[in-house]
Length: 78
Image (cartoon, rainbow, N blue to C red; front, side, top):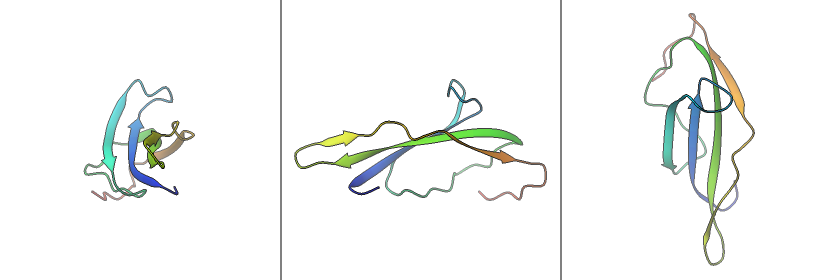
């Protein structure tokens, strides 16, 4: 994202993000490899960015919610 100085990432087991299982604050890049492997199941993720403005930093709204599935056949990639 243009002007982004850091990102916040959340991964949850539910679309409402009541059960966040992984979060990363102050992530400097838009790409991230979690430090842990996720268990088998469906997960939902979203992010928001902190953007440097002319006089202050602004936080964006959360991104649209996306999902991914970890199957029994998934290869661990910590």
